[in-house]
Image (cartoon, rainbow, N blue to C red):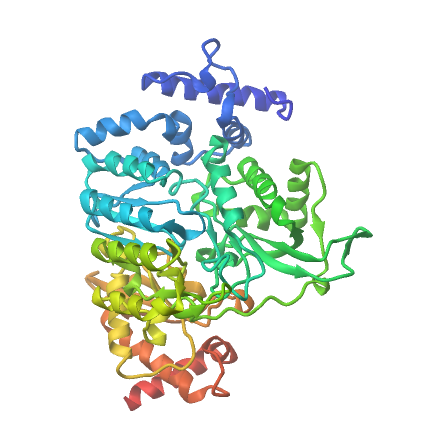
Length: 598
């Protein structure tokens, strides 16, 4: 048993483990840690850190949330045979197993849809053409015949019948893909720069680091079952933003200048990562610069140490306060980084920002259209997807284009679209024609290029509105009426989980049920926020208007955008700068005036 425990805590641990052993025995499961002797033996193996953290919580007088009890009673990776039995019987899980099956990437999404949704793991968002075509086949045979590109540069397959769920998971494995750990209390899909390795502006190719972290997680069971979900992103400072500042850990590529030093020791000039921690945009916080810089080759070891400090100290009693942000808020950054250093057994390198060159600016439209690569004569094409949806027929054509005309890679972005890379100049016109033939394009309006929407009430029981459908309605209303000459991001999210990150949108809409009478009747609608941003413009949007009916949202968005165009300080003033320059009351008055004039 760990020497870190007091005698009282050891007794609590023995009692806790004894209770879990009894629960497992009642289910016909083997004892924790493979123990065959005393039921009060401390757990061993890869789950030890988690069991000890749970025991410390109980010893301190805390009460574990249900999800922690479920993890302790039966680890989801030990329950695959039971999952297959359920599937064979065509039955869907109760809440306890619905949580467990998310470790395998499956979400039972009733009552919105009486089926599973599967979320993949795609490190850095890059698949080969044959993998992409293979996912299309799986979506056709075992799902609803379509996929969604997500805001973590990932794919989701929906409408999966219970009996088809194991076939889909095992089909992914046949493709060299996995969904393992893409849901529940685990480290989610690893994001990286969409244009990694092909971008003339980038400082660093993030692909090897995202891939290394992906495999580090997959091959260490102790990195599953955290206090809550955890996001990690690697940004190479390329043209397309990765939104690393919305992640629990954000590695931001920077260039260190000559003359830099830490504790009187020279720091080698060149490309490093800057470490940012604590991003969780749904809780109104972006990752903050720690002052620490990381050699790219050291990123995996440091991420691992951060995770293990979180495993030991994250809140397991309150799901609303269980993310890394809340450990940082309680401890402060200095204390947290000291714990990371203790776990590493060495000091982290801190560097004054004066020795860091400014990072290149993002191109907020680089994920759409034709763009020259750093390789002479080659290009990437950003394909516009209507709020991230692809039919299997479209997926197969895109795979064929990537294989026959490009370098064979398909790159998903956090902006819910994809890039086809390695396209020679001479092939561009043919590729554009093939995209047009399947109802897609590399061209779209500025408004549609920045339109982001989560699944919404169509496929999620938590959502207060049909976000994807409403996003398209906003575009259909605004495009004929207003022409934007500067990029604007409009994010529609269905609920407080903020999968579409509404707080960082220039305009952010969160779904709600809008009261329409005194009898308690409601209709779908939104609270509207303005002035959010990311990167150098990072910040949370401010509430602009509440309880807007979904049917009224398109006209309101138009009025807000017209107010910006009419009152901006200069023709190139961004929306976020305009919104932040005014108090909310002043913005509301401008919009009312525009609305009255209309």
